[in-house]
Image (cartoon, helix red, strand yellow):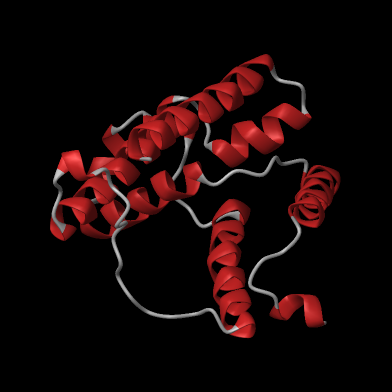
Length: 169
C-alpha cells in the first residue's frame, strides 16, 4: 500500500488503470467514461429546485434529464479519490494560489489570474458540452471505440494545450 502514499504515480500504471476502468465500465454498465454531462445535469438539478419550468422548457434537458446517475457518482468519486490520495500522500492543503507564471507582458494581477482561470473553466465546460464530450469522454472512451470524431477532438486537445503552453510559457 506504499504506492498510495506517493505524491506522483507512474503515468504508465495510471494509464493501465484508466484503460481497465474503461473496459470494466463497458463490460458491466455498457457505458463510456465521461464527466461533462454531469455538470450540465447538476445545473439542471439546481434549476429544478428553484423553478422546474426552466428545465421543462429547455430541449437540452429532454435529452440529458437532470438526475443523479452513475456518471455523477463517477465525478464525485474522482473528487473523493483525489482528496483521499492527497491526504495519504501528505500533499493536501487548502489554499487559493492563482498561477504565478503568466508572462510579464500580460501584467495580470492575482485577481485577474483568478478570474481568467474561472472564465477559462467556464469556456472549457461550455466547449465540452458543445463538442458532445469532454477530454475523458472523447480522449479516453471515444478513442477506445475508434471514433473518428473523438480522435479529431483528442488531436485538437493536444494542439490547444501546446498552443496555450507556448503563450503562457
